[in-house]
Image (tube, rainbow, N blue to C red; front, side):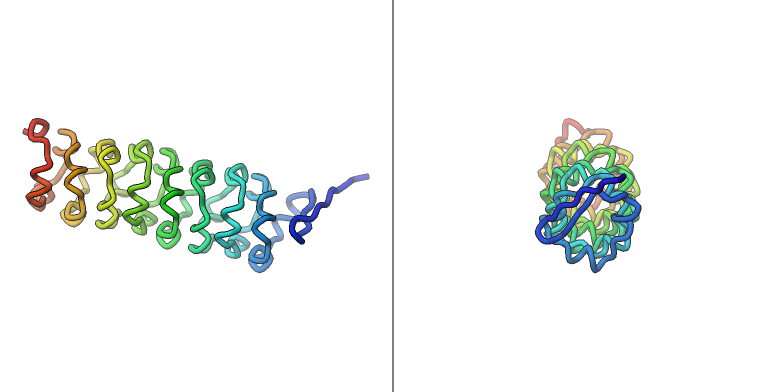
Length: 232
């Protein structure tokens, strides 16, 4: 005889039913009604089986209560289905364990709603697969929160997609690790937003990758910040 354990979490009954007969049947309206405390019991195998349509019912207070362990079950189509408002609930420890392929599902309106604190959990293998289209939604405070270890993975297509104002948040330790290959697509509009303090750590290889148009667009303050011994 098969036994199934049931328990109640803040008025919502959860059970160890076979995944295919439980989680796969969730609807958006059902998901939206779950109390945040019920999310604390989610497991990776359960999260992986939630239909993308159900993800549309997620709220930020629910997202904030998901255990990091459950995040490893996230899939790209599930990520793409999350409402932008739910992104505000992401925390660094959750963000850090998202599988890299889940980042393929990020959209600009979702990315722009991520709290800067969550960005501190970004990993290199996650950043490498982030769609350039998603990066068009990046905000200055989000960019400033990215760990330098993730910036090493910047690709030219991603850098080209950065909105100019996002670069106003760049820090020295971030700028110095951006690959020279990514700098080749730097635009004058992006340079306009660059803080002079960040340019003070530009490497010879990065500088050589800048186009003549970008160099010509530098402000007097930016030119002054360049360390002449590295670029002569």
